[in-house]
Length: 168
View 1 (cartoon, rainbow, N blue to C red):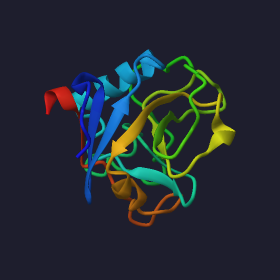
View 2 (cartoon, one colour; view 1 turned 60 degrees about the vertical axis):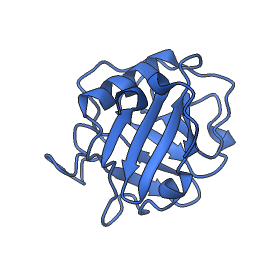
View 3 (cartoon, rainbow, N blue to C red; view 1 turned 135 degrees about the horizontal axis):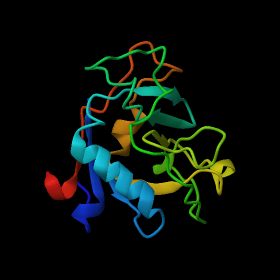
């Protein structure tokens, strides 16, 4: 288990195989960090599937509108929705998209990130400066590596629960 330095800015994501500990980066992307904590605290991420999982690239999740496997799930629409909160402005930084980093998923509009995010399976530096990096996996990356692949996966894995460590 990783040492949690700042429980208020640490996410505990429960997957089928175990817990993934994510260190959030409020000094780099404060609006994205606040949004993730707000959605985690409301339970919005609980039960949401990984709807786009590309081998050697990344695992995408966070569609709280269409991607909840336990409530109103629609695999055909998973990945097309967000939360009922407003979209976020881009918070680009010099941080690279390295293995285990969390990136904000968005449309072609750089200021369209909402609730969806992805975790990089490997260094994806071609994304640098184009997608907001706002966290990094500090423990449990093996559980991320075990997520079912596909666009969408035939039987998608879900986030069982997502909590702010300070509340756990």
